[in-house]
Image (cartoon, rainbow, N blue to C red; front, side, top):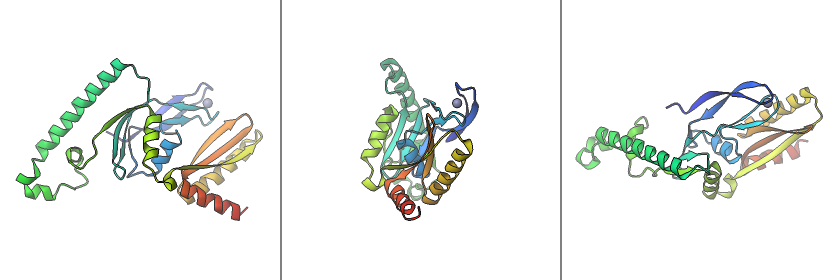
Length: 224
Ligand SMILES: [Zn+2]
């Protein structure tokens, strides 16, 4: 399964645009996605014309090897019990099949010492699922619950930090310039940007770990 796909959105303002949606999020491979999640922007598309935010409501797999978190996340926290049961039964079936397949590929280690030596090959994903040290898969309903869980596993310095640059007035060129500056700052400091429009106030949020955002703010204050 591809980790991402391009999805087309039709905004109520009349604009049609495409954005990337994630089916599988591996923050070990893409650490910035951790902050996309914490900022509430994972699988949320922003209309380039009116800045309206559109949530996709797509389920996704969340994997954080370092913090031992492996979860199937259904964004709807209020999914009716019946639908939950159907979903869980389906997941159990898929999981059981995956484990069975990987057991066929990899018989118990002690009987095949030559295979045991190879068991950490990164390409061998199906086998990784059945690894005894792999974290078990949790099922989480509601992105907010995932965010709360992830936050509880972070060091204070790793938590979400944000700073906003703002422009007032309807001038599109001024907004463009602000976004350009913010993007450059974000890239330099390993952070991300997100835009917001509130009346005539256009804000560009730069976000990332508190540590990185703190360094960025320090830099901005010394170079006004
Ligand atoms: Zn729009």
